[in-house]
Image 1: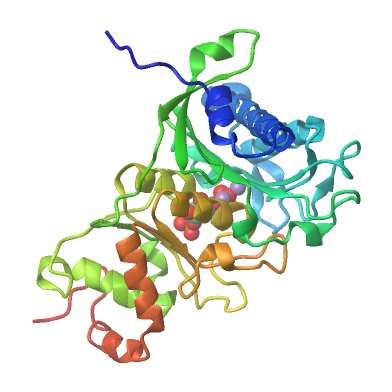
Image 2 (image 1 turned 60 degrees about the vertical axis):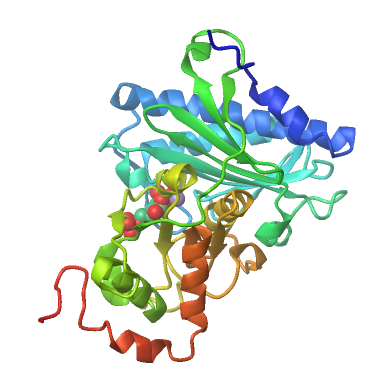
Length: 364
Ligand code: AHG
Ligand code: MN
Ligand code: MN
């Protein structure tokens, strides 16, 4: 008989936030429960798929001119409505909107600003591959006045909480309130009732193994990668006979939430590096609602998250939708990648590998 006590999200939050003043703990707990409830609703729509009209393009584009999928829009609507109704949220910002929103009722006094990627990995929706939601909770820095865009532009280090929800074979929320990382599984049977969704703690101290033999990168961009990343990947694929003296495995789901979740469960490295295609765009991923929350989660789980040279949590964004190179995962490997960025002879080292591509091995 399983005698392990069942811990639900509300209870886990009470324990996690016990070090905060009571009013702050209550406000943060209610904010996170609101986000969790919205994500449970998104999970239902995602699981209904075509039956919920959630497949296909929405015939609109987002803040960055990218085509929106119907599920991008639906997920954004659900989260935005939840934020508007939450008394602790002064304002919120989404990948899907150029400008942040200020709460009509709580813009002055709400404690928090919430930033989110309502649906990450949306190119995967029709293929029925896992997608997710990423969220970041920041303090409202000018309480007493309504927050403008500047209020949102805080380094990741300021986040009071961050998390993601993975809509996979099961729906899982991975959350940090800066007291380590916890994993909760959505009890889908609770969605049939009238009450709130039930999230059950299924892993209490998530730790990313410091060493790994697995990396994830979109290899079709190889020719554009910055040199230290070229070197790192070339050394990995050289395997047993290369300078690392061990074989590596490679994965690419194209849903960052799914990649980070794999790293949370068994270690690994995820990279979307600086890219030479458009030098003014530093990588593909967005700082505030992709890189920054994932960086806090990864660091809280004992991993590391950098832009190549600096910890992502230190980076102060200039704009809401700023892009940033992202290299995160098992600490030993990220330390190595950072050392390659710092190596003044890096270009010399790279000469050893420049004839080696991912798909064409050099002639013996
Ligand atoms: P989004 O669907 O929110 O635009 O994000 C997709 C991101 C990320 O999840 C993934 O790692 C990456 O884009 C995939 O990029 P490629 O299509 O270049 O592989
Ligand atoms: Mn995304
Ligand atoms: Mn998205």
